[in-house]
Length: 138
Image (cartoon, rainbow, N blue to C red; front, side, top):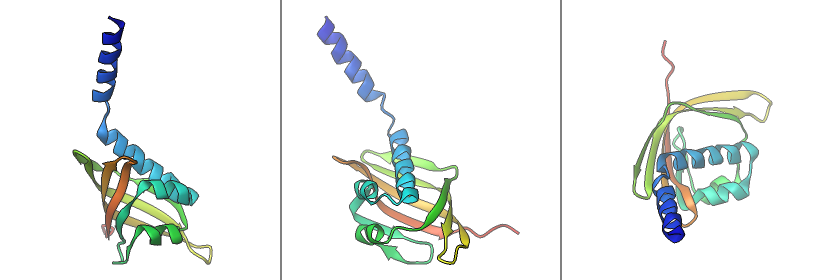
């Protein structure tokens, strides 16, 4: 009887996992790794085949990102939609980046960002990202 209860409890625990929450958690981990310039954490969160497109048209690989970590002061995610299709998740929403310039000034970017996350043996990893600048309303 105890074996069956443990098996049932394990099955309930597995089925209760929320993939959307897991993806959002991975995004938060990515954010913290960027802010802390934690290359080891980013290495775990970025897929080896990463395509990371910036709003200015520049595209980087995983190696590019790990080599030149951005000097970001803050990242704020807006209301995002998360769609999960098996081991693939699409996250779309506004993101505000405040970056530090070499001269001590800050720049703020308001972007619409599409992220593609894949779940594999290493958990959720960012495999693609594309951003577009949002034009402020008059």
